[in-house]
Length: 333
Image (cartoon, rainbow, N blue to C red; front, side, top):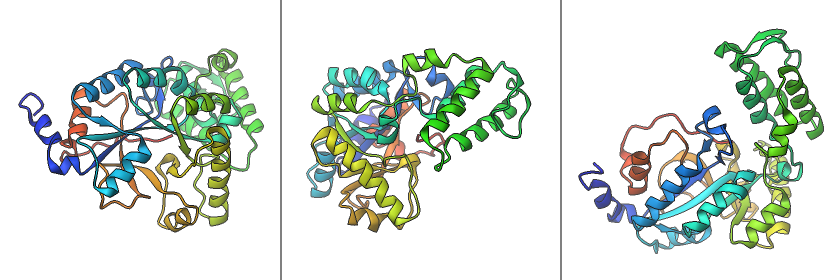
């Protein structure tokens, strides 16, 4: 279809030009993170290819807020695209921003401020990554309840240990220091060099100062909840948004009114809660192009990652991919 020119024709249709493609990214691999979780990390060269294509093919890359305003006003330019990054990993600061700048692309970063302030490796994904890195390990592993002697060469065992560590390190009532202690214990038992890992700041978010530098450079920093959590209690949810907003607005000196649901988690009660909080838009992990028919608090996106081929990316940009069967590769951190 691309060779036959179908992509180019589709991208210029009225149907496509009435819609907004919101691209979603998470991490840019600093080392081998893309091999550990291809659905979460993308290589710098892949991001360059995406942006090179969008620029050369004449797509209009808009800031998120402007693109949403123009979507509902019916004034989108041809082939409009907005670019978003979830969580606010330091690899955005180090790798993604220079690439975006080189291609004249603006981006929104949805920042989880708790892990920005407590600047240590994000516990759940760090535990899973360490288990993958030490997948030749056989021995005692007492940090994970229910396990004693483990053989991580067995994929089933490794996934079971990873699930247990994820549950422990994602426990809401556990203070940040205790979560990091679990990571330290796991690293010690596995023989994983956590000090070097932390020195390289893999799985770390941007610090508030780094986020401030990005905001001063034109990056749009927006809401992702303070603790990367969507509670089902309105008071607790309000606290998540208010804590997140207060910190982001202190960093950027600009309104924080756009949200990305952490881990793509949402439910119907959230919409009236968000309207009370004057949140103007919220993006999901649901696949699709946004249209005027979509509630602005339920906007679909396309999650790009290492497993997405260049031709599939181009099909999504053109609007052709929406008619193909979808694969279950989407993931959010």
